[in-house]
Amino acid sequence: TGELWLYAGTGKTAAPYARRTPIGPGWNTYTHLLGVGDLHGDGHNDLLATDPTGLWYYEGTGNPQAPFKPRTKISDGWQAYNTLL
Image (cartoon, rainbow, N blue to C red; front, side, top):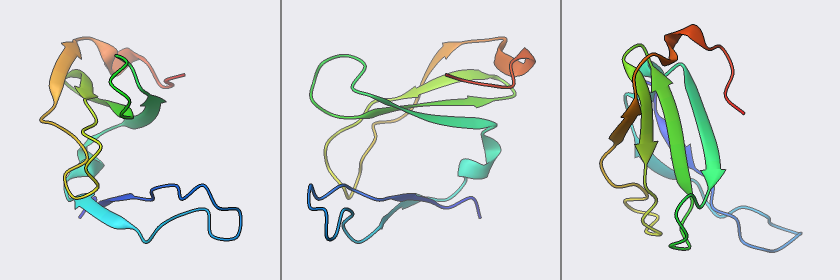
């Protein structure tokens, strides 16, 4: 199903992650997923993803129940790359 899960940090060494939250199915269409931190300074972590049609940006919302806004296409032509750093 390509289910993607959010494992939010708790800041506690004894239990570093909260209970996982499902983000949604269909993420298996992406070649790469990269957690990039906060790309534009709003305090929420963002996500980059590549698929055969390009590079996609998912802006973080800070809401564990709906952690990302709808995707935005950044660029075409990422099929030639096999690694994101």
